[in-house]
Image (cartoon, rainbow, N blue to C red):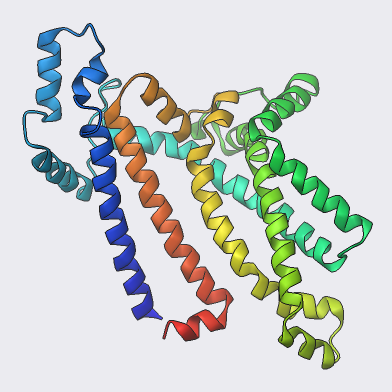
Length: 316
């Protein structure tokens, strides 16, 4: 098992290395002159020359790449041209909002999806199953920003249970900070919960048709015991795959929701950096998100091994 994990870790490290090449090429080579793009058409020649020197554009591309790669290894993502602060500091501040928001949204989607998926599979073909399937189809079809606007209208504008937006900061206390994340987390969680519910239901129905399930029933186990002890654990493998993909999406994909609620998160930082043509910040955020996706992939594979003994046997 450890040997298999080391092989996967090596493979994922090579994937990250290839990703650095792609990200560097897209932002430093393909556009032509990054400095001219960042400064705009009417840039002062002296200021433009200073920025080119600051970015190291007088050096060959391969030399700039290896210098940037060396900085990445030491955790140096450069200095933002707009904010004039280290990019790692900007990402750290924004991650303090996006990461808790992602964790809360993931927990909510799991808390909704697993029980509903199990209930629908256990009552296949009945009215309750059809109602859940229809609700999940609606949840997938409606975009999360519409949910966000609806939540603001109902719970912030009408009922006034929550604020319409903004983030007070963790230094103002745990309760106010979590309260500011509740509505955005729900808006992000509902479409993801709809997807996970359908995956859980389909995977569980497929598992219930396996031979070992018929054997468990033949031994005298009730339907609920068979479902809980044998079917559910084996049906979670596809759910873990989708969950890993969703986590990375939620971490960076909440740009619209963060803007609806005026949250200073990672998604909003990317949008602001693109608007301000701050390629240094964009480059740093993208590589951090790629690293996060690779780390989540490794965690999902570990979860595979813990959830399914057959995967552990194949990895020996």
